[in-house]
Image (cartoon, one colour):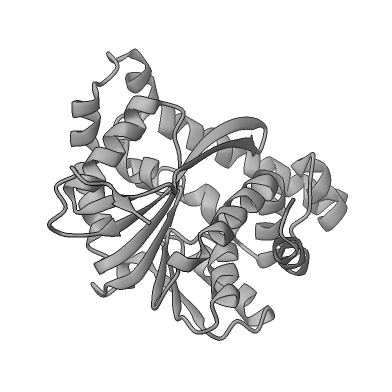
Length: 287
């Protein structure tokens, strides 16, 4: 049964179940403006898909959806509509996981890749004694997140662009759907044609980002990770890379769930890790 705190929070934010984004855009903005948004989004989705599938010169994989993300976060109204369509069920599942392991949220919290701040503000309101920081590459997303925090009177959360992180470390790091954008470097058409990678090769692929994540966590601190992985070998590589970076799995915290993500189903893996720089991966933590 869904926790009442989740229902109340999503209702307060304005997240609701939307079956058709096009219909919602017309209902919200009117026929002419709504159709204009639909046309612009169709073009941006096509551009994003083309870049992800076929590549785009020297543009890093991480930046191939920037225009689309910025457009969806041009205003808090647009951002909430998009989140309602794409993430209605996802948010409920993630928040339920965060509440289940509430005891691991201590001290200063960083939400890396915070997007429009919906999960960051949830954490801030859930842990008023903590200071929550949200970082994102999109300036538009950061602006929406700041507006959302203001509307919720969440005074213990602040947001900044990722380049302004300043090299700080935190007691708890929250990483939600950030890995693929930071790990996949080849066009998807090349990925699909390539021979599947072994666990060892997947580990090597994830090593750099695993080190990036560990650099944000204080010794003895925690990483709470929720990432999309349909491939078990790829996820095993990610886990091995995290262990190599000193982030050791907290036993009993792993959960897998599937939910509709926009128009399609997606599989997600959630786990908690503790940063023990001398962890050799032989002993999995018991909590």
